[in-house]
Image (cartoon, rainbow, N blue to C red; front, top):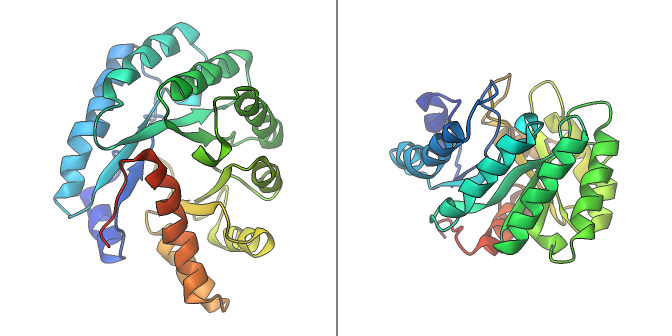
Amino acid sequence: MVSRITDDYVKIVTAGCEAICEPAFWAGFDRSSAAGFYDYFCQLTEHEPKRAGKFGLPHYSWLCINPKESEDVKLAQEVIELIPKFLNRPNVLGIGEIGLNKNSRNELKVLELHVDLAACHNQLILVHTPHLEDKLKGTRLILDVLKSDKRIRPERVIIDHVEEHTIELVMDSGMWAGMTLYPESKCTPARAIDMFELYGGQRIWMNSACDWGVSDPLAVPKTALEMRKRGHAREAIEKLVFHNPVAFLKQSGKFSVPN
């Protein structure tokens, strides 16, 4: 939400949002030092929760150096060394959004460092898969890294940005599948519902993209409305858009929403 205006907070509260979960992500430009990431982590864990609190919303975050900035391994190592200082903060859910951008060797090295960090500190993991033609290759590489570390429990990992050609791989791994909703690109509400109808509602949940590009903080409630139009039961809709994410996030030991 650091890239959004306060009007977006008003809209999502009005639509019934109960909490915000914000991953560390690209700032719209590549940061030049670990100090820049330190300030960003302070923004996510101190300042943005205060802004969300003005609208009655709990704000949670994930921490990492995102894949788009992971080509510089030395910088990534410096940033990763900062993260343990923030993990005890009450709104930090885990390590994310880690993963791959161009499927390079350096990105893989940094992914492995993040996975080790999560394992050492018993943290949940949120994974970014590439927005490229080689999303399938990237997803396979990511799953190989996660499966090779026997400390990682699959039910404590969510693989985000799944699409039609990657969701089955993720579901077969025992990990959670995240569908990131965009108005035009990546995964539209209609495509997300199609995948739900094919694969069911176990270990799947949806999230609204709220980044620097064309995105819609109301994508999840709009998708819920579209599911109603398709005739899905209210209980199935609530499980997908509310109860599933709550079940996954409660594994952190920190996440809660009002009853």
